[in-house]
Image 1 (cartoon, one colour):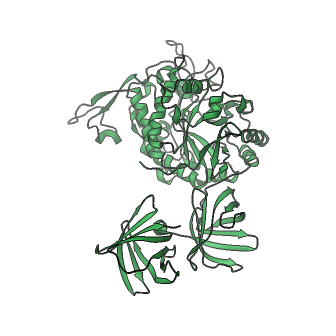
Image 2: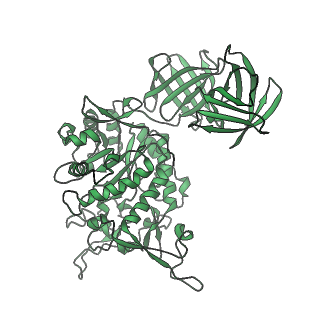
Image 3: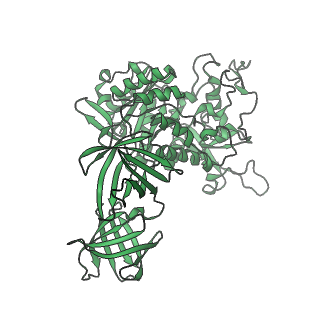
Length: 618
């Protein structure tokens, strides 16, 4: 599948001797706290009565944008969402942590069911996998489509606010247990309630009593899938147990690796189209057999192959190197054995957790600096204060590192915003706008287009020409700075959005311009086209065609720019465009087709008597 180009670039700096993150030919600084959307419910956390498509993520992401936070990590499988922890100030009071006499392990059973306010099990609502409320088990081969509807809507909303989302595909901590303090370190909510635990899934993987970390990297571990009709049953739970007239389930062998790959493919199919997405393979991957190539590194190489099949280099892939002995050892082993681990070349970034200030890129292995973007996360070192996050963010930016604060408070978000040396956003003002008024009057009929990649284009229909072309270099909630390529200088404007983002006001000194948002299907046809061929050939002189957001169309001779035709576009469908010529007093319908990434346009008359081909000028 074809996807949009990445909005970010990885650029090697000879001066720094390392990879640095860029946007629009300038260094990009990404940082942010966690918004309160881990449960994929927008701002209304526990209201399962909301349909998946109606959840509103806007207020939470607007909160980040207000503080100039433009990045956050999102765990696709988040273990705390599978069991009700109870009141925040208490330590999992809903779990029975007394030890079972037979096993000597905590019971970890729920005192009350973990359900939302609408009565929906947490494990059904907050998991990407399909959950059976009767069996109280997941199927790792089937997916929770409502979850992916909400996931896509969250990413799209983040895109509207200029925020990048890093999707964490797998989580080692959810398959683990740490130490013996089952209250403080919430072990009861981890492996006992993991979808990968055989006790919790119908696929019979992974059968481990205490923790499933080592087995998780064993991609050949056997499992099974179950269905009556394979294709039909993929999106539903088959009847179980079989009743009268219901055939027996077919049991088909599979492997843990195949189930993991199918899950990755589902996430990629649902999200890779968004240019504000990047991927983290696993949160804190430790454990498994060590050696020259640790099991977890072989496993990660296999997962990268699946991710890259969809991204084709257009979305960044990160490895969270949580090597306890020394930061970066996994990646160093990966690179050293890249003749065997052939997907190392598709890795774009490395993530370090802990005390962010201790990471000095110049002290890291040259392989890491040469090949990878560096991202740091405060993890459990997090302080929610404004001062801590401001200084920590400044330190990360100074060292050209991305920064994820394991913080949720406004104070932390404000600290990051205060530290942000420059910022770009992709807010709801992106699109095409028609000028409705200005004070003082200068150029009354302008069309203003801002694209998601930062490109700005101002078109003057009175002169049928571009009056300004440039690119946004900095933007926050109130003002934008752009490079005016036409005049070769920086421009600065304050902007406001009103009427549910349908009205845009731009203020430049004493000049105020007001625009209304274009709502219609013509965006693909904007603005200037040059006719390059026609069949059959006619005696028409070479000309330009101009299409505008107010549905007008003008053609002009190339030699003297004189008007050939003034017309109105009266209808557009998925395949046809109808044009009423005011000059010729007739109406014609044309089949249209865009090729070469929208740079070439073919118009064929509906009676197939004439075909014209144009190339895009602007």
